[in-house]
Length: 217
Image 1 (cartoon, rainbow, N blue to C red):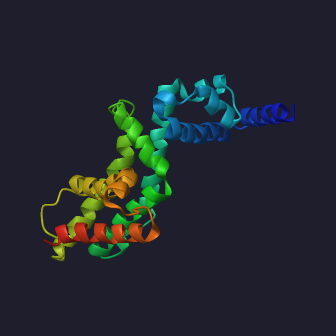
Image 2: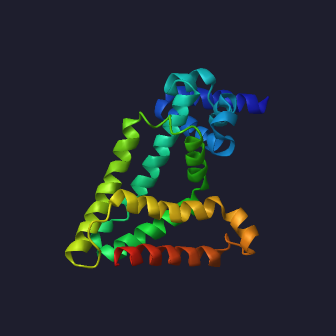
């Protein structure tokens, strides 16, 4: 009885505050999709977790596919905003790239839901973000930023010429994404606990060395 009253109060408050209601649904959906994937996620659970109802969810986001698209866009927005906060143009090119490598790996560690969301999106061949103008708009500034860092590195002769910023970022992401996405099997195969703090520190250092070694070649 008490639980039902609390849910009713939360829904009433949400109705009076659309932005808070939308944010609560998005947060609940992120947790649901990250845990169960798109196929296993249930709108009923998302609504209950958000203290909303399905009608409200459909009003703000449309259907489940549209909600998944919104979750992916929000996930990209969060990581891109965090990257911008690094102020990478304020430090020398080598330091900037090293900081981006470390940040990317740390972000994946601290936000495992980001990896699982991308896994689910790829399972469905990215059909939810192929037509998303927001997703492209969110990611374009990162590539422009990396391009600016590379140009500075070329000018001061610390970096090789002709590096594609898209290819570079994919490599940076892959070095951490594959490691963390396969950490359990890799740990079993090689007899190492690759998720231990020391192992993660070693991996981050290795990633920086690999990327900078390539750029300085």
